[in-house]
Length: 348
Image (spheres, one colour):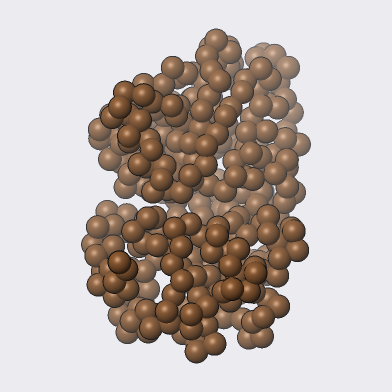
């Protein structure tokens, strides 16, 4: 599947579709806004009424800012009088900040949405996050079991492929093996597996599905390691690099809309990264937080979240279809995965 200027053409996924909107404001246009709580279900109306006595709400997320902004815009249009502030960090940075604030008894976040299921599970065990019962919120109750993790719902799904500079790369890579090309030596970006779990998972999947020889060949390509893939994508856009690995389309949208020659292709198999949401156990806005999480998992909230190129656990309009090629990492194997990659790449 190839991605450019919000158009998706199937390669590994048998599907073709156009992104809905492709704007940070796309989410504010869908669905009617209830002028009064009488237009909501009794359960949500009760939460809405209580939420107006709370807040504003602070949302920590590791998703891309335009999508977070679109979701907030859609939520605030749907629930007038409520305000959501947000902070976007990488998963590793978010985990560290949230943990430090809890331990210092200075919590800030009410809701987190982070691409590290293992951290979310640990935060639940530590009672930093409050699990949601299956029937606690309408949108959570409607989720397939696959996307409900012991009280913490998958809120959006990253799908990771290969980004490349379409002006400089004459023969685009369409498989992981294609990346092992002398033309890409010293010109291939990959995320620091010590800073973000998704890169450790991706590396372990390469070893499992392509073989250890592949991982060693990749190491010989003199990869450019980055703490966050966003500056890595900027290197591809400028021509400093030619390709970037484990890239989700949402991280390229702003550059592509600005005219950057970036395309994303998905090989026959590709990994996914689930962003799970949790409500801080010590939040001062429990009703507001529940209302917000329910909205994120609603059709309108999902359309906003995937507006720049993500997959939806409810397969909302505009979502990247997962197809048969996606592979879910073994989240509990993160320490072993990082150890494996360090044995091959040996970062200082």
